[in-house]
Image 1 (tube, rainbow, N blue to C red):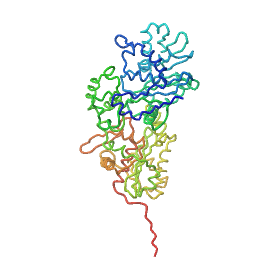
Image 2 (image 1 turned 30 degrees about the vertical axis):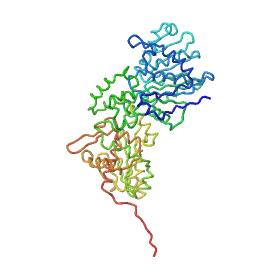
Image 3 (image 1 turned 30 degrees about the horizontal axis):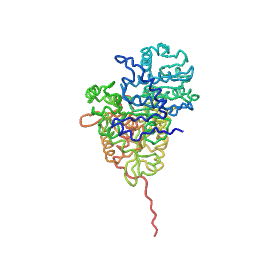
Image 4 (image 1 turned 135 degrees about the vertical axis):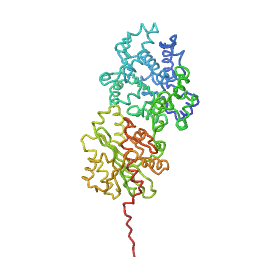
Length: 552
């Protein structure tokens, strides 16, 4: 029985040293047979139409061998069933994908078998189909072997009737597919589609009866924080690579910078561009990256973030924008496991902040409890959204689904359900004799106040927290408490997203964080946090009395 591992715990050192992070093939003979075919394929969009063997770097051959070298000829089983390649833009991944799928089509021993390249859009589908068609047209023998149908993006073997289809993904085109070998191009774009998981299940369904099947995911980093199926697969590949999860059937090949180089911003140095661009000097110009990096360096509209994500695989997270909120730099380090129950158990007093609540908005809730022993500020947040808000924001639907899975967001079907649930949380704090005050934006008090009164919360516990420049003190207090290590939060993905969305606008001597400046990125739970901070900063008295019995 063959033994192999898909973990690569020393990947950081290997990448920095310019060495391969791709494991050797399990079956070298199978790998070499496939590589021999792949090397002879011509790249038609390059001058002189060179073969892959003439114009490719070693990493490409290693990748091909890892895929085809996972096939055990004696049993007909593919031992590695899932491959993931994360690589920077312009490293010819779509052309390589076309070559791999054409090689698979040539080697396929079945008849009437379908090979599938699944692309998120028509444009991406064309990017994969045209190189494959070009390879056939550039070779007389292959032209005799295959029929090309450009209008339906299909290549058919004239003898075996095996096909290679390139489809732009939607539920109609993918349903009913019985493909054994599938390549998914630009996985990051699928991450933005709420129905992507269903699509993949439909497309991969044919592999149930095909032990030789595999799926390859190709992607660059996303132009916004990873979400949906992209985030799910990327996190899993990282865990397998790092040895946290043992899964020899999954291989993630991830060209990304070590954390230390991200922290030190070493990725900005041209001499380090090679780490996520193994094709540097061939299809990737280091000079072009350096020039455009310089041009985008001062931009604060997100262009720099997107450039770094696409050309250097820097994951868009919290702290890349120049107009970011200062608290962002300390946010991640202050994450601990803090639940709502922890607040009730550990706090001597709790302040609450509430913000938002429109039908097209999130309703944000934040509770800050001062720890009885350490006097640290413990923070827990939650948000609610109406179904109508999800429907109106299709581009964010997959992200919202991620927050629901994490337990940070509740989707409500009935108007008023959100305010009732907020009132329920406040009521639990009140019953526990921990509630000090509830801070609310005075402009949105109506329905929330009604729900609180209905839940028997004293009306004098609700105070209006002035917004705009008057909130500047609370914003600065939050920054300081994070930097000092006093404010501890639950490390919720929802809040990380909101914190990353926050944009600072200087206004005289004050700073503003407004929903308008944040654009489509929601910050309601963060504004709720500022409301709660403004009340906790007043140093409220402990609510729970310490009853002691003295014996005489």
